[in-house]
Image (cartoon, rainbow, N blue to C red):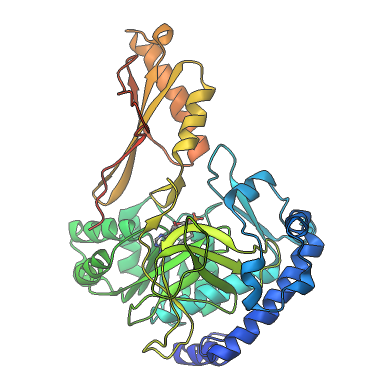
Length: 443
Ligand code: DLL
C-alpha cells in the first residue's frame, strides 16, 4: 500500500474493505466466508472435525450464518488442551509469526499467523487508526509492550500499513517517551488508557504540555470507562478512542469507536460477532448484555469457530452517524471469569496458585492485592510461608522471597511485590475464598 492521504485511504477502505456494505451484502459475504471456514477447519483441524462429528455435523450442513448456532463453541481450554499448535489449520512452515497470552494455569495460549493473517491484521488496525482520524501524515508512538503480547507489534504493523511514521517506544521509560513526543512532534499514541494517564501526568511534571502536538490516542487492552476517556481528552486536549481485541482472535484491531463514540465498530467482514447468555449460551438480541462470541471468518493460521471471549458487552446493528454500517460493540462491562488485567497483562489467580503449590516452602494460602498508583497498576502477592521454613534469619527470608518472585515473574510476565506472611496469618474462609482484592476503581 502506498502512502495515500488519510482521505484517500479512508475512501479506499470504505469502498473496498466492506465498512459500508448493506446488511444484506454483509450477511451474504459472512455466509460465504463461514461456509469456507467450516469446510477448512473440518478438513484441517482434527479437533474441530471430532467436535463436529460428535454432534453429527458435516461441513455442508452449514449453509450460512443462519446455521451458526448449530456449531460448537470454542474456549481457551480448547486451546490449552491442544497446546501449543494443535488447533493450527496450516503446517508450521506457513506460520510466519507466533504470539502468546496468559493461559488460566501455567501454560500460555499460543496463536499463529500466516503472512496473509498479518496482512489482514495490519489492515484492520489501519482501519482503526483511520477511525481515530489519524493517517499517513501522522507520527504515531506505539507504547504497548512489544514481544509475545500482541499489542506492540499489532499496533506497529497497522500504523505502518496506514503509511504513518511509527515510533516503536514500547513501555517503560516514560520521560524518554515524552521527550521524543515533543522532539519528534508525535501526533498519535497507541497504549493502554491507564498508561496514557500516567504519560499525561509526566507531561505535566516535565512542564511540556504546550510543546506537544498530540491529536489522538487509541487505547485498549484493559477495561476503562467513558468518564476516563473524556478525562484523557480533557487533560491532553486530544481525541481518545477505544480499541478492542484479543490474542486468540487476532490481537488489537478487532473493533474501534469512530468519532461519535457510540460503540466500537467491529470489522464484521473478518469477525462474526454474537452475544450469548453466559449461562444458557443462547443468543441475545441487540442491546442485551451477554458474552461476546466471535468466529474468525478469514483467519488461516488459527481459525476459530464461536470463540467465547468471556467479555461482557452488547451489540448494535443499527446505522452509525459516521456512515459505517458495521455492527457496534458497547463499551465492555466486565468479564465472566476471574481474569485480571494488570499493566495490560492478563493474570489469572490460578497462575499464582500453580506457583505457590509448586514450591514446598509455601502454604497454599495466598492473596493478590491489585492497586493503581500514579495510574500504574501494582500487584502485591501475599503468600504464607510454611512453619518449617519460616525464620527470623533475614537472609533466609530474602532468598525465599527471591525464589517465589522469580518464578512468578516468569509465569505471569510481570513483576510482583511479594509479601511473605507468617504461618496462619492469611484469613481462612469458610466459603469461597477471597483470593483477589482489586482496589482499582474505574472512574
Ligand atoms: O489485550 C489485545 C489488545 C492489545 C487490545 C492492545 C487492544 C489494544 P489479550 O492480551 O489477549 O489481547 O487480552 C484480551 O483484554 O478479552 C478483554 O478482556 C481485554 N481488552 C482488550 N481490549 C479491551 C478494551 C489484548 N478496549 C483481553 N476494553 C480481552 C476492555 C479490553 N477490555
